[in-house]
Length: 111
Image (cartoon, rainbow, N blue to C red; front, side, top):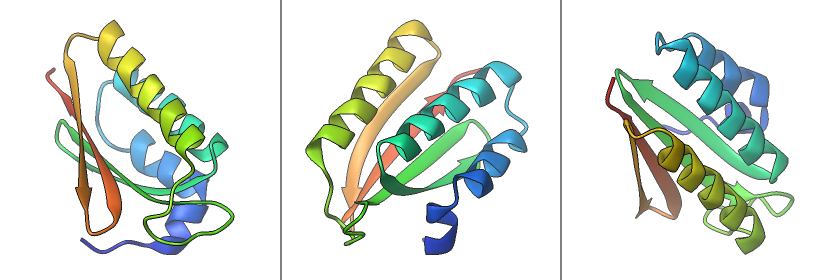
């Protein structure tokens, strides 16, 4: 998977990917809120949306920007947000994988 580091630093580019994903508006709004939360928690990240599967790749915490190094408080906030999103929307299932020093958040939306 190719990671565009410049895209990771520009939240507007990621929001554009989400907004043009062809997902129903409800899920776009949820993902945009999650995107804001990740950005506000100072994490470098990227998003890939294929059909009803959303992959969010967490790369590093700012300001160190060292791949695979994360601030635990930031991660806790993101995991809490994911848990709440899944709890309030039964059609959403999430999981987390570690691949090549990245945290890979996978969100499956069963529309």
